[in-house]
Length: 130
Image 1 (cartoon, one colour):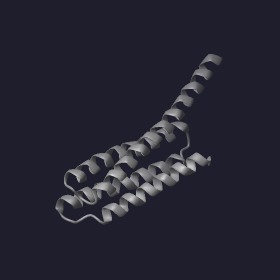
Image 2 (cartoon, one colour):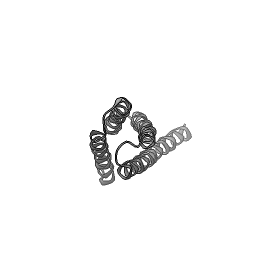
Image 3 (cartoon, rainbow, N blue to C red):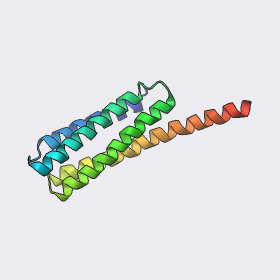
Image 4 (cartoon, rainbow, N blue to C red):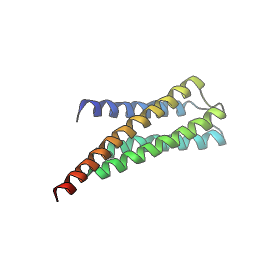
């Protein structure tokens, strides 16, 4: 695996661990329990879909798995917004995690876009050979 892929994999894993540590420290009540469950589920899905992308059988499947991870990051962002509105947890830590989620989303989107561009080039090359 190229070095940059390993760096992104490590960043995704560190993000997931950081988020889970954050939600573990939140106060527990009816509203926060719902938010905690959603954030924890989304975080696990980001990590799992990113990992699964590298086991993909095709570039299309790779892009699809990345798209799922990106969608989960978007959902985490919405739950982080709700947590901030309810003043759950340390606001500075939540701001850092929110920024990390947005950065990871941008990174994964760029990876997916690069693979998509390569697929389009390959397809155009095949068509031009006909």
